[in-house]
Length: 479
Image (cartoon, rainbow, N blue to C red; front, side):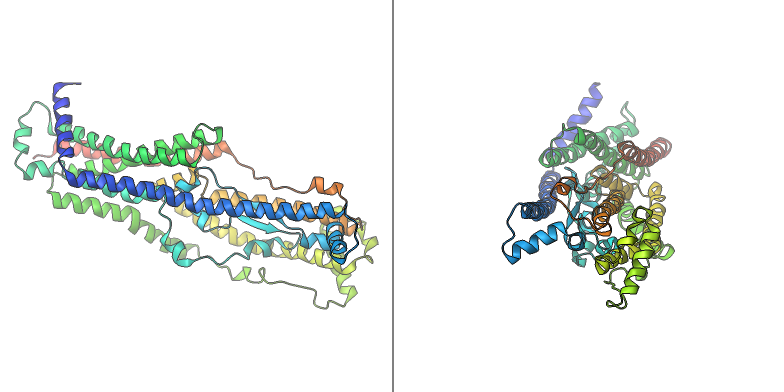
């Protein structure tokens, strides 16, 4: 390290330690970081507690069904329990399975879509779409405000901290009359600004990394196989995002204007990236790809046979169901047994089949919106980094789409498990409870990592662009 570099770094350190305002800002930011960790943990803890409760409820329910085979059916309640446990005419719409999307260990750092989409569903053999779209009522004010998690702190508040520390690196020296003295030194003004910028980069980025490390260690085992890569991506993303905002500050400082111009310009870019562009894109995408959910209104209504006492109508529904499900071909010979139960089971399956086109159209609308907005990540690295953080913690929209695809397969297994018993007039045995359908969520780790890397390359490109332009302008412009 050269003597000049040591002097510059020592000067910046002394200046920083004597600036009470900057120290207070760092301390307040650190305290906000601790609160953001606590907030995220408390939100995810509520969800994990809920998940434990619903798992316990499901386990208790099926344990009672299994034990009913071993109990003597002497009372009416025992007989009823055994009937629900063994008779598929009752079991297909009473046995409840919980499809659960367990939060990633680091979900508390970037809550993402977890406050918008249900993370568990109770499924029976009844209509899947009815059960999926019958959501709980959420607090719209809370959804609008969002969550004060670590990603919010990093994306929104740390850029303001960087602006407050760095906007006067050049203009402050010029306004204090120190610039002419610096200009006669052997080291160039540009190099001095870069060194001072690097000092604050390491200072503020270290704070961001410290908060992130605390959040990572509190949230889960950082050395676990499923967490180590996510932790690396998160830390690298923090460094990259801070570097992007320092590159913007260097670009603005390179104009060599006064402090007011630099501060206002930096704040304007912050508003542009974090408020104006997202708002414009939100309005634009709403206009370009409007979400029409009116077609789903019929799905969320319970339906039944037009005439519940008309056996012929019930048989027609069963025949239609069998025609679309070759695996049940031949069971029409047993149509006279449990006719109405079979008809209602067939009706729910046919309802899902008839409504599938509307559901696919609605899901495609969401997919088109998401793809269209993703195409503008090049011009908004801030929103891009927010998307990267949600990908890292698996709280992004694509994770919930994978969850819904897994739910569709899970529901088909549930329906088949009971319908094959119902339509073939077979009872559910105690041994069948050892082969209950289970939820399987497929994850593609390679695609997951690729999406994150591509997103970071976009932010890196913007960072290099701003820094490169600022580096050239700082050299060519006069004092």
